Length: 190
Length: 190
DNA sequence: GAGGAAACGGAGCGGGTGTTCCGGTACGGG
DNA sequence: CCCGTACCGGAACACCCGCTCCGTTTCCTC
Image 1 (cartoon, chains in turn cyan, orange, red, yellow):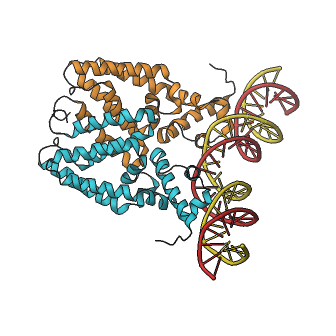
Image 2: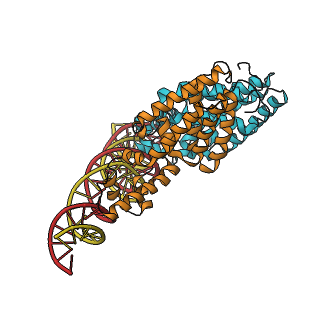
Image 3: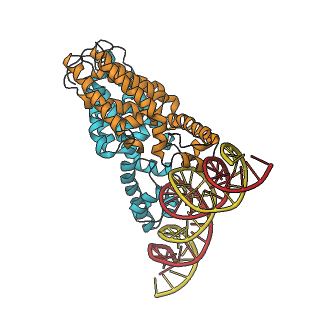
């Protein structure tokens, strides 16, 4: 843990993580390492010394957010209204997608960082199954909808970050609403 | 038109277009020019002589398909059932997305080739407005749905090609169904 | 079939990125 | 306060990309 001894090294490590958090949020986990180093005000060699692989850096940046995600999932499962729980997760996912590109890349496993949070992604996936099953039993879902439909929706939302940023926010929100309506069992506005 | 005189040059031009069609369909209109040249069995200089810019090549490859698209749009507008017309366009878009990545990139203007078919994209957009308006008047759409919701859906479907190919096909189809359900005014399976 | 123009193709330039090497810097224990 | 060493950072290597230059090949005409 505290293998780093000198104070400047420790401070630099912190600066790298902070810079990577901003950079990855804006440009995804595939953002250039030089850009992260530049934003942190250090050289790229220093970055590589602290984090030998990109996955190490991604892990350090997202560990806390991924945990927070899991907590939201468990809270949604405990919601007394199954549909509200599921809809909240989907809306939260869309919201997060708008201002943090990195986290969803990891959750969906589309980046090279797929293996970093393998355990957490499995739990995330299992939780989603539970959420959908609960909503289905409660009659909140359209007939025939399963967890893979929800995943397709989440993937669609996440993929929209490929668009130019000024368009993506509005489109992500709109697509989220359409998908919620498409999953739901009745036609009242969700 | 027939400014190309020598037979070998004409044959090479054809081979470039064929190779570009395959390459762009698989990897999008941003695919490496070297890859197109390699697939055509010629050097990159020859490719650039026939098509000085990437947009020239994209134009030559997609002109016919874009026209066919416009024809489908007009046919959908003429459909006696407004919902069937709109749903057919969305399903066709998803189907096309699965086996040809290039065409939808141009239609949505997400690539660098946005300006190539500017005229056709405008017509496409106007046709979509008409389709949606017709469906809305016929009561086939959920309350509050507008053409931008449909566009958000199309963008979501198109963006899914970022996924690894073996996943994208199934997910695209699923998302298409969810979106159709989300746009439609009642809950019967569309 | 010989000559010249048309066309070809690979080497190469400029720019970008991931990753490593090594001479220089400055922290901190003594 | 001093010096060893942990640490730093820019230069550099290897690769991929768009695009161009120029020596070589091939076609077509006469």
